[in-house]
Amino acid sequence: MRLPVQHVSHRSVPLLVCLLAFAGAGYAADRGVDLYKLEPGPYAVTTIDDLVLTDSLQGRDVTLRVLFPDGAASDGPFPVVVYSTGMMCFPQMYDRVTAHWASHGYVVILPNHLDSPNNEQKLQPSQYGILLASRVRDLSFVLDSLDEIAAGVRLEGQIDAQRVAVAGHSFGAVVSMIKTGLYIKDDYRRPWGDFYDDRFEAAVLMSAAGYGMKEMADNAFEGLRKPLMTSGGTDDRGRVPLGDLTPTEWRMQAYLLAPIRGANYALITEGTDHYMGGLICNADRGGKPDYRAVELVRAMTTTFLDAYIKDDLTARQYLQSVDVLAGVDGVARYAYR
Image 1 (cartoon, rainbow, N blue to C red):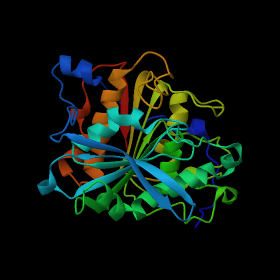
Image 2: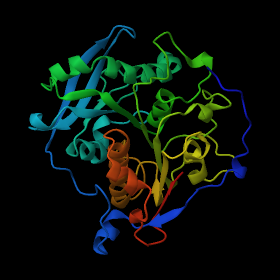
Image 3: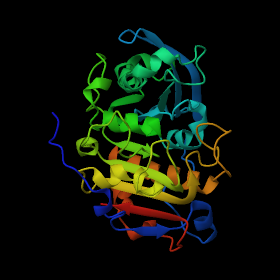
Image 4: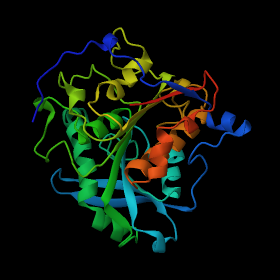
């Protein structure tokens, strides 16, 4: 059900509530600061690149990249993160984050969307009109197919279908927001099932878009209804005109406008561009590699996933505590409300 439209003045919303400044992970380590889940987890990670499933609703094959904890059957079943890449981005280029999650006990599944550079058949101009709906369908298709995926990668009984998060970067972050309630205009729907999927319990949003996409309803962010963590950079510019907003303000629209209290988090790294200097999406994009930003994002998102997917009280308390602080200005900003 759509909520009534409320016109929001972007400038009237405070940029960050409970603004905190803390050190980058490498810098923090030099000063003896221990960010929660900064180090790789206890599991070696197995990666399967070529699991192909057929989605009968779309009438197409979907190739999946699956990362999972290796040799730990006695510790499962493991919760799931379904990840939607940025536009025309390589799923394998997110390993610096997704493999970190897997090492901490998550099964991470990345579909190659219609626009994936890995696909033999490249995106056709006639497919642009269905791309958003196809991507949205891909994520629910993954959840519909968890038993088949488990069999395909020999993880029978080790995937917990009751503990599931959605995550994404850029266009994929928009798709992740849609799966957790973002309102989209009816013109962009297709008969492939509902956009919102209640099976996703939380969302990790890397470089999520703010207002300005033609597909978004006027009150788009009022639909968000699940715990979320948004991340971005001060140089994280998008293709949509930002109006009078800074890149930081535009990337934080989900954090600022979602009607979520007590489970809403934001991380902004100073000087970080949209591709973390070519460390995610595509190595040929972005400026100087920003390893510090990658460390911060994977540490804080793992903590968030532990808090809201594994129901880890220690992780949740950490997210809302002064222990996050490293006392160094100018490296990153963190907030929650």
